[in-house]
Image 1 (cartoon, rainbow, N blue to C red):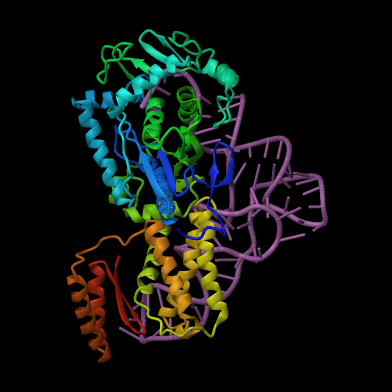
Image 2 (image 1 turned 135 degrees about the horizontal axis):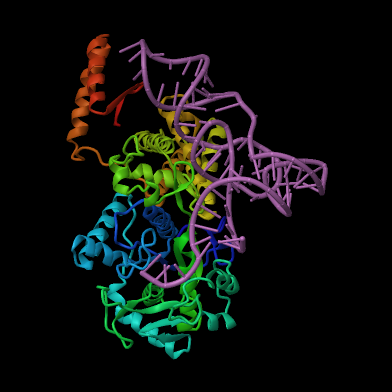
Length: 503
RNA sequence: GGUCGGGUGGCCGAGUGGCUAGGCAGGGCUCUGCAAAAGCUCGUACAGCGGUUCGAAUCCGCUCUCGACCUCCA
């Protein structure tokens, strides 16, 4: 385990609205639960943000030496369309429209989600439970909540009694809401509900005749209320008390608020120690992304460039880098200009990293430029300091760019290797490796074969070109460079010979 | 309307009382057969108006503006 004594990991807890030192319930172990996707459509930018944010946390916690169990659910039942007509189950509607079984829809989009998440280099969660796989457990929770007096049955549905709960508990503490305010805003709306109080929420919902996703229960055929699955599955796999619960800010209310109420109602205590919420994604200058606005971009469209708002394609790593350049609690705005900037920045960083691995240090124990030495050690330390400060990846990347500059300078002989010690050189390489690969999850984008054939061929081509250059045969030399350029291979001539890269 | 969170240089985006964020784009210089890359360097920003302070992008108030959530419901 790394030494945390200098600066402990601090994370922002939505519950307290403060950054807190992270201390796991069981030393050495961390349980984290993150709200995953509802699989009724193509994965889009909105899916990428929490996935990357909590992948980052997962990676960092593991790097710090914790044994982490990361649970991210797949919601595959009973989802309503909220950007179209109200009152329709998203998955059921999609299934009806395409004449498919609901589970065919679920299967298809779960796979799409996994493919996109792999492309973004997110690690597979330890457990990825589905709501449909936990119907029995959810029914048991409903029964327990009824038994504990926190719920009531009404026409085949079961509702959580928020009004009663609020009398003895602070319902709304997570999102800063008050029950009275909620009442005010709901009073004049549809009063034909089975609910006693407008703020009550369904934990079991009776299925209407046309509803195709339905299960038997003590209250008749129906399906579980959507807040329930997360409470049930998180506590099943992480225990009645666990460390971190994450998700998008949009889920704070009502979803996470309801989870708290359910957990208290069922377990007699709150389950979650640290609530973490990533901010949302906007498009083209702060517009929210929505199908109705015509700026809804799926990840696949981003990867291929096939969308009317996109002037080019953007690779998965560009997207990941772009999101990491912002802090996870800030909104991040997508535009072609911003993405192109990110693409270049990403390549600059990765190129520096590749050069680092080719550089060799003679081995002397002290350098003759103490200020360079100091700058390197400082940047390496700051990377950890900034990461520990609520995962401030924007600053971490800035620190890594400081190191990048040193590497380029060393590579171009603008900075002599004699300037820095072996220790500084090694520290720099180690820091870059750990942060880029392990923590930030950035990787070289796969191009061509990695069987050594491409490398060998390029070596040969560049050797031939080098001999042409030695003969001042600029025609041949430039022809080779131009033709390679047409194949998207850039050749750069340096003092120590030429290097090539794709893109 | 209610609750909460934002508005930073050409673009993106850190930063919460005084010290260079960083990336991209642009100008200059160096290197270079040319090109590219890279290094050095320049720009000197903090929505507006007041206030607190020796000193504010950073704290307080007001205004403007953007966004999230706010019946049913994953």
